[in-house]
Amino acid sequence: MRPASLLLGLGIVLLLLGILALTNPLAASLAVTTIVGVAFLFGGAVQLWLAFSTPDDPQRLWHGFIGLLALVAGVSLLADPLGGMVSLTVLLGVLFIATGVARLLIAYRNRETPLFWVLLLSGALSVVIGAMIFGNLADAATVLLGLLLGIELLAEGLALIVLGLLARRL
Image (cartoon, rainbow, N blue to C red; front, side, top):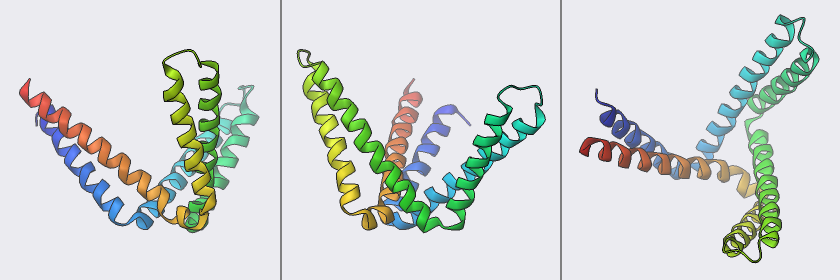
């Protein structure tokens, strides 16, 4: 199979998954929580393996500590996926606000450059989105992760479809 066909096929699959995620954001949010939980379990297991398999490593205790935290986070997300959705949504809200404030501060430092308005608007929008998440956390927790996943899958799918079509022309 040609690379262009692979790109096109993968793009179509991702596009369809994105549409599916957007039509059922609760299920997609649960899927995201499960995937993140499994990733934490895997990462925690690897960190613990590093801690126990490298007795000469001066960072051994840190590997063990981080591995244990990751395992606890993974088990927590998988044991209570709805609570995990709330936790991940809170984390996203904090991330939106923190990056928004950082962009606003960078915009302030770049008042005399053409970047000012882009940074100012981008930062303000991120802060508003973060505030909206916290303003209605119950609703945001059930759909936000799924909506973000759906949007990401749509964007990736469309990009791969375009790349596949362009690769066919070349």
